[in-house]
Structure formats: structure tokens, C-alpha cells
Length: 101
Image (cartoon, rainbow, N blue to C red; front, side, top):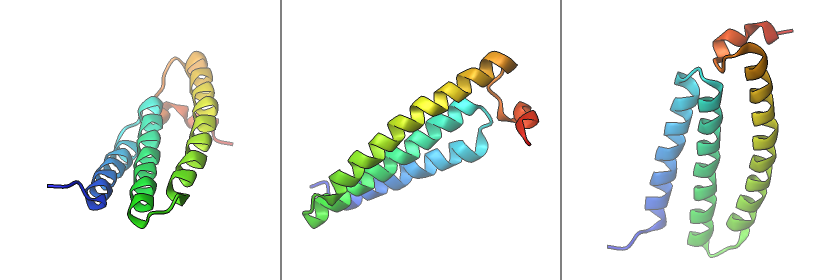
């Protein structure tokens, strides 16, 4: 039994649903951050599988740019989370309502 791109698309859909569920259900900023990363990786898997099925290189090129943006997001996001945690001693987003303008 060969693994077709449809299997990769199904796996990407499951990973994306897990990430979206983590984003909607959890209130911890770090868990939400990891859920966003999981959703980005699901999209990357979709790009690679589609590119492989169509025999084009654009899927891998798109993944490269998504990974560059994700790396920048990790740096900025973790810096903000650490700064908030140091000041508030919590990573719960429910307790951060004072940050509204």
C-alpha cells in the first residue's frame, strides 16, 4: 500500500484541527503559541504534498517563506510572552485583560 498525497493532506487536516482546537480551548499563552506553530506546520505539509503531487517546486519555496516568517514570529512572540510572564507571574491570557487600550 503506497502513501499517496491524500494521506498527507488528511494528516495535515488533523494537525490543523488539533492546533485550532488548542487555540480555541486553552487559555495558556504558551499552549496557544504552540498551537499556532502546529497549524503553520500543517499548512507546510499541505504545501509540500501539493507540490509533490503536481511535480512543481513552488510548494517547497512557499514552505521556505512560511518557515522564515514563523522563525520571526517565534522570536517576537516568545519575547512578549516572557516579558508579560515576568511582570504578571502568569501565562494565562484571561488575566491579561489590563493590556487593552
